[in-house]
Amino acid sequence: MKGEPRWWDVTLAPLVDPAQGGTGPLLVVSRDITAEHLAREALNDLNARLHEEVQRQTESLRRERQTLLQTNEELENIAYSLSHDLLTPVRHMLSFARLARTADADKRERYLGIIERSAEHLSTMIDGVLRFSRAGRHPNQRQAVQLDTLMREVQTELAAQPGARPVQWEIGDLPTVDGDAAQLKQVLLALCHNAVKFTRDQPQPVVRVQAHRDAAEWRVEVQDNGVGFDPQYGHKLFRLFQRLHHQNE
Image (cartoon, rainbow, N blue to C red):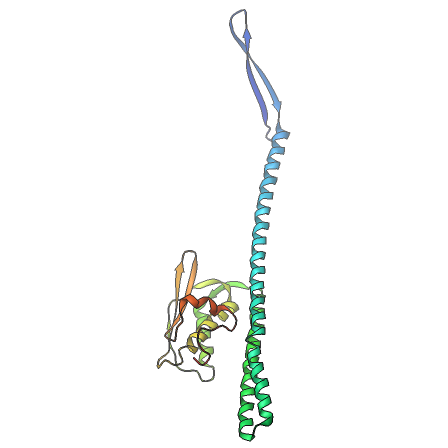
C-alpha cells in the first residue's frame, strides 16, 4: 500500500562469461520480506514486554517476601510479649490479690494499690501491642510533608502531657519529604517522647533534632543528653517492650 514502508532481501550476483574470461552483468534477486520483518519486530516487542513483566513480578514477589518476613517477625515479637512481658503484671496482681485476702487493713490498701498499678501497666502494654500490630496495616497516604510543621505539633503535644518539664529544644532545618504524614508524625513523636523521658533526671533536658542529606534520602537524627545506651545493644530497642535499663531508670 502506498505510503507504507516495505523491507526487501536483495541478492546481487555477477554473471561469469567463460568466453571472455571475466564477469558479465549482475544478477539481481529481490524478495519482499516485509511480513517476516514485522513478525520479528512483534516478537522482539513481545519478548521485551515479557521481560518487563517478569521483572515487575519478581520485584513484587520480593516485596511480598519482605513483608511476610516482617510480619512473621512481628508475630514472633507479639508472641514473645504475650508469653513473657504481659504475664508479669498478671502474676503481680494474682500474688498481691492472694496476700490482700489475709492482710490487715493497712497492708490490704497497699496491696490493692500495687494491683491497680499493675493493671494500669498491663492495659498500657496491651494497647501498645494493638497499636504495633496495626501500624504496618495502615494504608499509606503519600504526599509532600513538611517535617518542621510535624515537629512543632510534636513539641506541643509533649508539652501538654501531665507532669511535662521544660525542655531545651534545638531544632535544625527540617526538609519537606514525600511520605505519610500520620506515620511520620508517629515516628517523630515516639523518638522525641523517648528523648524527653530519658532526660528526666537531667537538670536541663536537651533534645536536638537535625536532618542530613544522605545520597538520595534524608536522615533525621534525634539526640538527647539523657542516660544513653550502648550502641552494640541498640537493635534490642526496636523489639516490643525491650529496654536496656531497669524500669526504674
